[in-house]
Image 1 (cartoon, helix red, strand yellow):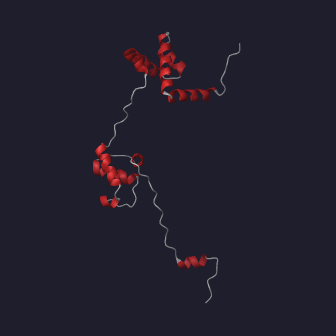
Image 2: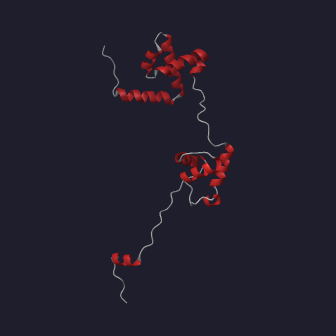
Image 3: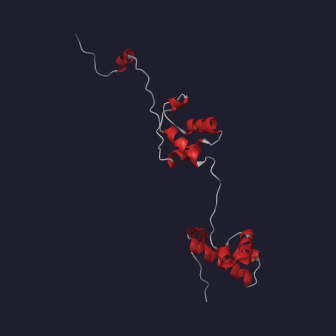
Length: 170
């Protein structure tokens, strides 16, 4: 019997892995398969190779399964990095954004990432990069506006020299 093959194998492997990561149920099933392979006698390294995961990942799954059973394979809450600004500070930032920069002694007409970064450093001693400040604008419901460029004053003599229509005769 001829072995079955999948066209575009490498691309399909990546697509299948993405699909597994996208669904919490699929992730749980994937971890179950990893632990099952180890329970059937494969080493963690072999199971990892078969599933396309790292050795350490499979070791973690097996340890969590040993400690907490099936619940150890469920997707848990991830705390993430703690916010640098407290809820009270965020309220102050939002109130400050509703006023003009001049009200805070800042020499600018429009608010932008660098200006907010400077404000946070002066006001709270918190250093946020410009890109983080831009995200903060969006999270607080503000949108960034780009300043309009100032057009230089035109010289009437130069304009007359380039003008295609002749000047009116008196």
